Image: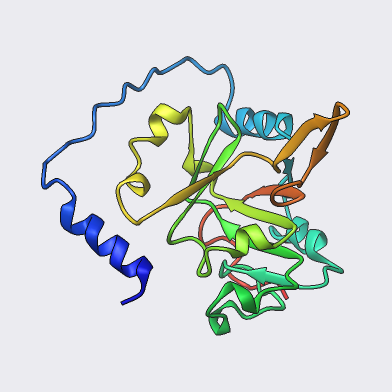
Amino acid sequence: MSSREEILSTIRLERPKLDRPLPDVPIFDEVWSCALLAVFKQSLERMGGSFLEAPITGDVLRPVRNKIAGAKAVCSLVPEITGTQDIEQVNSAAELPDVHIAIVRASFAVAETGSVLLSEDDPRVNAVACLAPHLLVLLDPVDILVNLHHAFHRAEFRSGHHASWRTGPPATADIEGMLVHGVQGVRSLTVFPIARGAGDTPVQ
């Protein structure tokens, strides 16, 4: 048994066997004057993220096709788009050193903050959304919630071991007052609104 396994086994053994239900989280509903998708877009762009407008007619995935055109390596974790890296053949993050764009689907999003949530079930390899310098997130508009108080009631917080919020690309402004994106994470985060199951033909 490794030292790590020994420590974790001891923690599990000594953990108090108590039923501690989570406290009720109020909703704090507000009256929104416009559609949640518009509010989400505004919040996302305010945090440095990008939003791809869905076309009214024609190829629904055309904006995604244009976005990934010319990319060195694309790792897609969604059925709508075929990347250059077959994620089914990847077993560890070490096999993804050169991914340029990662494409994932968010479990849901929050309009108030412009955040998307990636749950444990979304990426097959958890690190793929952190290794790629550019992250493209597909989001079903019906999965946009008003605020974080609604988000805490979602099942994704009670199933699985972890989930991560993404609110635009990480940024810092503590070096000579210059705002720099992508210092500790992706350099760009782009969200494309598309319903689950739409675009049945994979984009090559």
